[in-house]
Image (cartoon, rainbow, N blue to C red; front, side, top):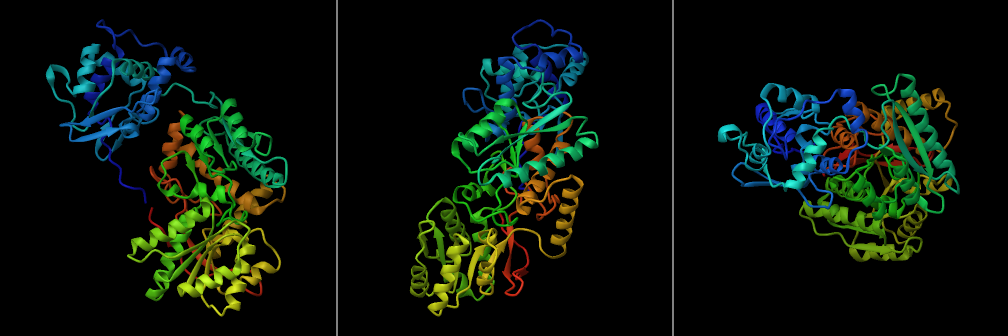
Length: 554
């Protein structure tokens, strides 16, 4: 399900890379390269990278310099130009320099052992030869290197930094990683009105990691959970900053509001956040939250470091339009969008318009309102004025019930589409008031799969001694923990943030428990892209499937 990926970056034959590696060892000198250090000595010297090696690591991993300049390279005759992350060495040689073989083209290892072996086989070379190989694609005697390998535009200083890092690639330790442990963090509300949710997430994460540690850890490293209170004076941003300052490889299950400053820091440090606690449509953890749910909008196209499990409002609205499109043709064309006047509501409206446009339909009209200030009569009047045959509603469960009552009073029979998360925290009469004509968008499992995954979750909670708590938050934390643990296993023995991100990008149809199969990709940061339609049984209040699963293509 992942998107096709161009693999031009730093591709070359083993002999060509071996030559370049030898040249790298001798950068800045014309004499022969020194004998390699013993492995133990090398590992100790790489535990804390020197400033030059740190700059080189950024070039190797991200294709950018420390001052923000983007590395560029051109394929063969210069007709194809690569820059930034697409030109990063790690894209083909691997985050730990382990080498890859994809599309029939081998990108050999660049680890210190591989470079040392190449040196013994071929002898040293010079900085001049390196410059010719990297910048012009010329090997010994002017022989052209593999045309798939970019010809890089690297300044002398940048090349020197890259060399400094290549002496440690696969040996350096990222934040939170030691020889026997990996520290992972979660920013959660441990005080205040949401303390029960924070405690539930914390306890599930701790139990999941304890389960792994009891089996020997991952590559003999135990998983250590560090938690900071996001309900304190500095809020979510302060809690996350404290975790990053303390040193964690990644964050998991944290409360996530999508704060731009916080997102920028995660991006800068390349610290992935896996399965942020949301509780929106799908796992039933709470009603829509404007800032939080807007963070998911567009995540299907985001290549950032936040890996969300469930879709945002834009994807859910697209599912609603797709479902309407299978009804009589006029139904999708005559939809009315009603949404809160905030980022989440605007994302809902944007998704509906985008799906309509993709089907050649006119943009649906929209009615927006300030959160908590809906005029139900305005909804009924707008539905009548536009001849609405369906209404896509984003707002609270209480506002949804008021809108339905006004439509009923006005004699409108138009069905309403809304996320099931809007009523997740409501008990008693509200779900029954909304049974029948309201079609809820639900991104979680149904039927036998829901029962099986629910039983597995409850068994895990009993086995781990986790006290009863908000089940939606516990399910969300369980899914996040399983995804992170699987990705850490796939990262390999040399655990790095870039390696973890790459491993997450390779997850395909992963069974994470009480969620549909999860898939990420290089430009896909939402694990589930789609939903089912359900309605509530008026007698029991249970969700009853109305449609099959409806996928949305990112």
